[in-house]
Length: 127
Image 1: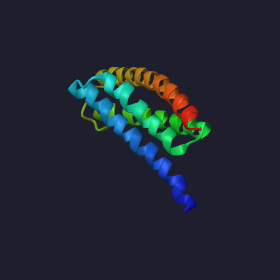
Image 2: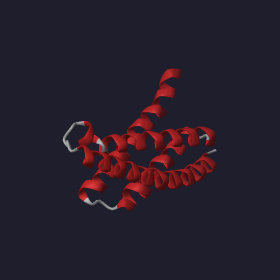
Image 3: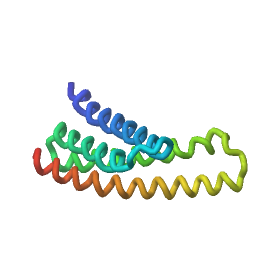
């Protein structure tokens, strides 16, 4: 039972990172509003993490793991054409990787700011 209590928040973080990654890929490929994927979805996920964990320290720790995991997933998803050798020109591969890296850093900074503010509010509200 104790193991299950520790695995549920980790599963929540993993599922949340996958949801945010899918939203971010949809923003880049299909033109979905970035307000939805950068502000609303991460804020609501972090709010529910705070509600579920009921501890400010754990909420902040899980928020940082959520942010790092979603940035890693976004980088892998957006680098997939290079990783799967769909793009074969070496010059274009280098440009593509740099552009993806800059895009992921921009996304990472925006999501970090919004998520940390939400985690502080949620952690203080439910602590």
